[in-house]
Amino acid sequence: MLIQRLAEHARQSAGAETPRYYRNRTVRWALIIDRKGTPSLISRADSVNKAGSSLPTPYLTRTSGVAAMLLADTLEYVFAVAKDDTDKAQAAADRRNDAYLDLLKAWRDAATDPVADLVWRTFQAERHLDVLADLPDEAKSSDMVAVMVEDEWAHLRPSAIAFWAQVARDRKSSGNDGLCLGCGDYGALLKTIPEMVKGTLIPVGLDAAGRPKRGRDAALISVNTTAQGRMGTLQLANTPICEECGSAAMAGLNHLLSDDRHRRRGDDNVFIWWLREPADFNPLIIDAPQLKDVERLLQEVHRGQPGTRVDDNAFYALTLSANQSRVVVRDWLDVPLPEIKAKFAAWFRDIASTDRWADGISYAPLWQMVRASGQWSRTRKIYRPGSTAHGLDRDLLHAALHGTPPPSHMVAHLLHRIRNDHHVDLPRVAMLRLALTRHPYKENIMPGLDENATDPAYVWGRLFAVLEAIQHRALPEANTTIRDRYFGLAMTQPAATMRMLRTNANGHLKKLIGKEKTRPAGLALDSRLATISQLIDRESGLPTHLDAKGQIQFILGYDHQRAHDIAAARAARAAKATADASQS
Image 1 (cartoon, one colour):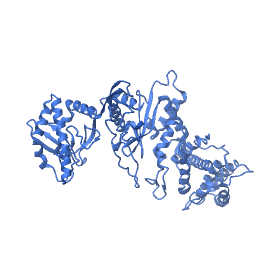
Image 2 (image 1 turned 60 degrees about the horizontal axis):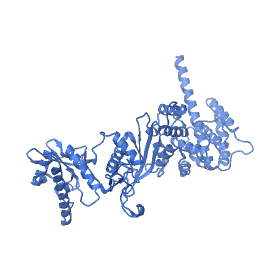
Image 3 (image 1 turned 180 degrees about the horizontal axis):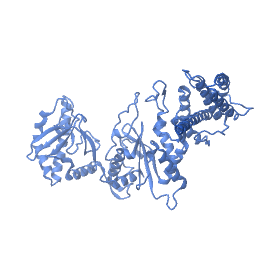
Image 4 (image 1 turned 60 degrees about the vertical axis):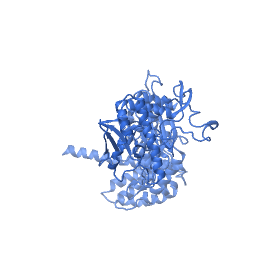
């Protein structure tokens, strides 16, 4: 189960993360106490970190109005600095300060640590209040402050770490014993999950300007109303988890969410992954598909690995999003590593396409495919920020992980975009080819030009690319091409568009062939047009209208022919340059 796998990962990576029940938080102020108990206050802000710098500090989700953290907390808790000037705010600050002082005393009483005794005596004598005069007027009650003794953070001492772990167990314990679903052992069970996922770790979408929105801290498991729990029970009564598994699982989850090597952040989701045993595989190849890496993966999957068992290693992955203060588990994978490699190999085979800017087969990164679902700006030559299809990033990732088709709405959305902006590039072609090769179409279409394909829509796409090349060669200075004017019409009404454009092309070809300088190009284009036209059935001709599948075939035929022609021209220029160099 999920909790079990996360806890296992946390134990395997122990030592790499912060202490249990600690979280990296921004600490604005340091209260320094010397060996004589004399306090001073310094700011931890600088020109780079204006709000202070990050530091692992004791942390538990505050489930009540007053819940102090050991040694490192807000100015409201440490100094009773109120949120405003009202009596109500000051009374609340006093209650929080009392809780903070009670926690310091409890640490002193539980630990045989001279530092604990020194800190408590300083606060008991209220000498810490002497530094309030050093607080600037702009200081906020929510600013974090941590205690240092000489040059050591008090909350990072072994006695403080051990004491805080016990406080966490006491606060989060349900008071009941039972069988833990994670480890299977009988013992004390948790009342609630001890820690929440930090709001910045799970993306919650973009605003209208394409900027990330700010999320809230979210709970992995939250049952706080009778409607949510089985038979009306609250909290973790129906999800028995021991303290060891609960704390380890959250430590493992937060560690993965903070590790760029094991996470992939989308617009409104985050994908994290790990392996049971270290291995040379990284699913983040989907966003950076280097040709050599993809080819190595394809070859490995094709030939298999004789002599190894399919369960030698396991691949685990989570896709998470957030809804208010709750974590939403969008996807959970626990599969043999060879299985996920096969899924990724299938993904790359299904999106493989030719690119007019490069020779051979190319593989579009997933993030570019998602971005290409947006609106194309012809003036800026970019996709407009914030215009991508909602949820497409998560849906395409799911298709890659499970070998399933892309979402059904993707094709209609993408065809609508292309009809309007007439822009066709590698990421858009990759998405259309993915849709065509998987259910429900299951077409066996090549990643590059198929000169023998007779599908009328595909042939029509090739013809349109040649007609565009003829116009460009005859009218190189034209401001508007046939793609600008007729691409949307050509996608849906081939027969009518073909008759009109073929008539115009005859005039362009006559002009090209009539001049000695352009005669070879004109003859070559005329021959290419005639050769492709022979693939059309003479009796049925081009269809009157194209459905979604036909429109995809048209776009692929157009792109394949265009990429093939540009690659041929590039090769011809290279050959000529080589020949000229050899003669000189």
